[in-house]
Image 1 (tube, rainbow, N blue to C red):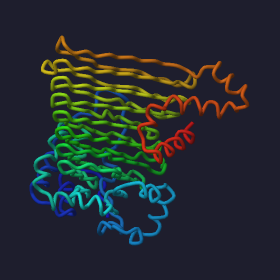
Image 2: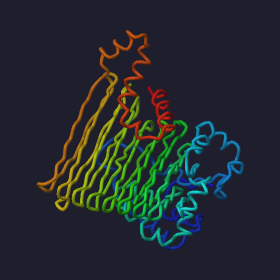
Image 3: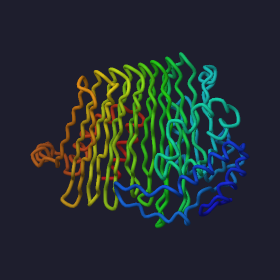
Image 4: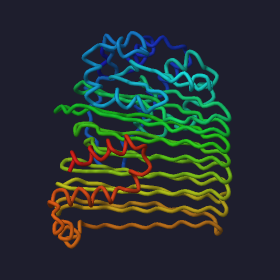
Length: 437
């Protein structure tokens, strides 16, 4: 079944397919009104999308229910996911969810984690089983009026993850969701809501891919994260969308007193990426970290960065951005640090490093730094460089080919990002980088 193009009746149809209550249907309809009303972003790269051509919902035969056993998934889908390394990665995880097109098709979690009362399921399942949590948090951290694509997601969201970590709970292994677009002109609009209650911690890993088609596809996700008092959440993403995908994502975390939010964000593929993970440091002594890499090659624009909003006292933020551009690619850092008047004795550090591999490529750094009190500080550093001929000569004089030497220099440039990933994902990132050079 497919829903192509968008109007009010199709939003109602989607809600009916998902058997939602009136509150969720009304949320979608109000979001659709906001989507129609809002303009396209007035900054960043040009977005050329025909919203009438997009497939907003697609259900395969596999989507009748969420499975916990790979043997119950259609063999062609299993083989495809196995080739991508999804099945192998599950061995290192506490739980995994897989979304294929518009629906979550697989979900499983270790028994030891279930015993801790952790909830890890699809957003649709959560709306039916945990309505009080949904009512309290859903749509409260990212508003439908945030931007046109947040409104679009709010109108047509399908799939995505819901995670609740109870108070005083620590997970030893990450949880992961994997998202796959497999159709031409397909739009994927997952909605993720994560709640890490007080004195708890979570590491969540997300992977995204799509095959290459001539027609453009759209990925417009929304991620909302609540980090309770003295809690910690790490959200690691490695996305390798095909070069026909517009990757337009809104991610925001609200961090309470003593809490820490870490975004580890890798952008390797896509036609255009616009993504700026945000931390709202509401509580005193809260901390936000965002470490990003962007790799832009021919016909690619990576417009990414981070936003840190300081509200509580003695809050700290750290943004580290690494970007690589080659073969005419454009890798741009666009970020914002806003230290409010209430955020006394706060500190922010922004460090942007760019490696440009040829004369056809470009990179821009577009920071916005605002400090509204005299006891706080913002530091911003930026470097732009090329691969040193002296370094290449030194490595080649040791018997290393130019290609391998270049790889070594680039992987060294990205060390700060790779060291934040679990070992198996760092290895995966290395392979992705090598394939994209």
